[in-house]
Length: 321
Image (tube, rainbow, N blue to C red):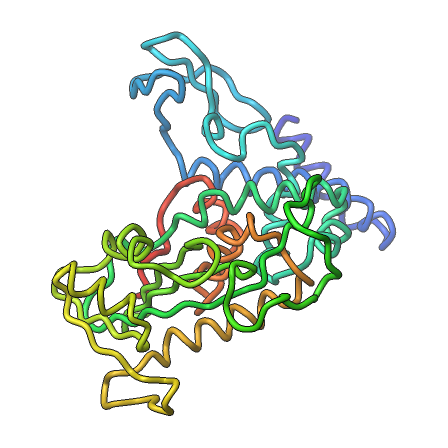
């Protein structure tokens, strides 16, 4: 529309009645949503490299639903900022930010689907596509006084077509008392600045080999590791040459000066309370939910645009400051 015609059209908008204004806003809403999504995508990945050959030189080659398209100078293939990301080929881009806003509010799959106007299967697929890279948004290392402890959840094969055990009702209990192979172990390490590393180590109690694989690469060499009295931590610290202090929680010891695991235990509690609203999640998706909780904890991600940037592998929110 030419500028003069657009000004005449704007001048007539004030004469619309309430119902006509609502109809106009309903028509403009999807277009505005798509513009916001395109601006966030361009801000997260302004000049991506070719996902096919990795060549960094390309030239503009039209657009794809508002997103700049490029042609690689190396292999000649075309791509855009979503190519090679978990969000490639997802539809209904105009609704992405509204859906991410529902994720920031920790809405369930069905509640988010109803709010945005998509099918519940689409809502489920979007959730885990958006969380695919968010779960890797973590600090590079933990320093100073770092606490580590495990939490255990009953193993769930929710959604599996073939169960590897006898089925049980949702919210059931383990057949054996205490921690067993029926439980999934989640290891959480957290330093006093709020930096958090978490991982699903497997079933049953944590072992020295699992600590060596998951914990050793993220601990600074001068760290002071504080844990409970589990013998695996003591053996791990001796082998790795890391300073280690333990509190004997089973005997009633909670705090010994600055030596405690209160921060990591509080993180466990927040995660359990937050996870309970989803009425049980499959164990294979636990890394995604851990990443989701880390993004929400302390309001590290406050806007849908920022969550979209992290989901695209853009700027990190790993720093607690």
